Length: 180
Image 1 (cartoon, rainbow, N blue to C red):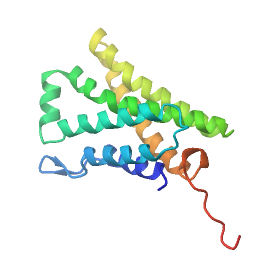
Image 2 (cartoon, rainbow, N blue to C red):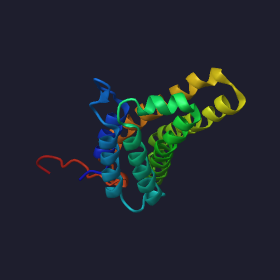
Image 3 (cartoon, rainbow, N blue to C red):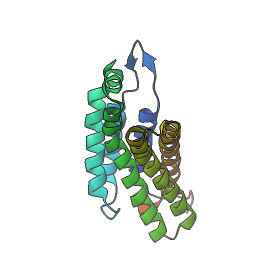
């Protein structure tokens, strides 16, 4: 198995919502299960891989709790900061993934790829920290920026995991050259 392929597919499932009479027909728990499977297959040398596994498992559990129709909306109606708190395992995973792969890419002397992973890290930090200012300081204007940071981080990490999947430093296998 090429570890980053199920990670990328899982993140796509998490990102997409297909409404079927209130049910998300692309359930986030399935996406997080794929992410967890791929993360378990990552090389042990990836920085904080074990923490990634824990964060993916927590994201899987949190997504299972809020997957049934109306639950996420009821949670948000009760307290928006609780919705943010339930997103923290996902954000923790995205940060750890970006950080681990940035370090691996840098170690493999792939500086530009490492820089893109660093960009994803920064976006995840923005998505995690800005809601604190929104809820704590009443800076409502930052709410949209927090959502934008989270969305861009997720999309960027999907692209980076797909394009890095075969990199040896990410546990991938380089493509065989026909006739070689």
